[in-house]
Length: 436
Image (cartoon, rainbow, N blue to C red; front, side, top):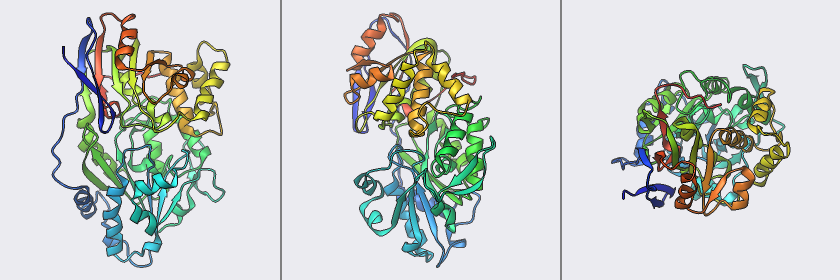
């Protein structure tokens, strides 16, 4: 019998065999890619030849202030490896260390613990430079314009006031924005809670807002427009293989460099598929943060027939956030047979079930309920607890074999997809997906 694997963590995989009667359609097995340069070398090359903007040495010097926005630990970005080359370049052109501020672009996420942040930046950088975490409820956020839907865009004041603004992120598939990184560091990373809420409720349910699509994606187009209003001067984006290894770095204009990065890495993720599966088995990796675990369900839904099943192997750094679980409780207590429709209607009113909770908790609720209405969802984990899975409405299994055994009762002769790294796959069925 053939054996297959899923990534559980970076250094741990889970192997299994398919049950008798199940037939494999696609095994998107990530292959190692030879990488010959260090990330330091990649950053230097990118900064020396930025896309559609002048290099740093042509625009910055002594007396200039610089804000560098980084993403938090919900993303795989190797921040501590990307930062030194950028900081060295700033030092070489005469920008003082005291004139550089590192901003964790949390959006509405929970702030990172100090030790985790120190590890993400590297101790030397953390101890040398000013580091702050964005507060989407801060009183001093600066209005910079309006969303196309009408709401006010309020931006982090430190980022706004800097002479030059840089972002660091990962150009990887994203469920609504098409791809993450680039302009997305500003919106939602550095804006007000009300700005994020309006943008996400309006544009998540628009046609074209799906993984891998930026060409006809209104969610992405508005994110990009906001980055322009915020005057994001340079992005630095890590490009990945489908095994979640950085193979290159791109730097430059917030839109042009982002698009260049997408063009260079999309073939690592996109997989042509000719037939919908009955069952898709995948890992949530590289996502290990509570609400982020739901993201890979989107690609699975793109290539699994309605009424089919999705088995998700997931690990998490800690307990599922109680406010997120409470959101599921609130929806269940409404007593509706169609909670997905309630949430769609809530979004259409530009509202959320829990208006004070982090937006990603609400987004996890939305996507989970929408997909539960269309698929049998099972979560497999040693870290997510049975009670947590049940509160979210997932079936639960302690092993992939147990999940398959239960699923086989409904699908005795299933056609199956297997995605070892679910967060790094873009199924291409030849037509745009209809996810809602």
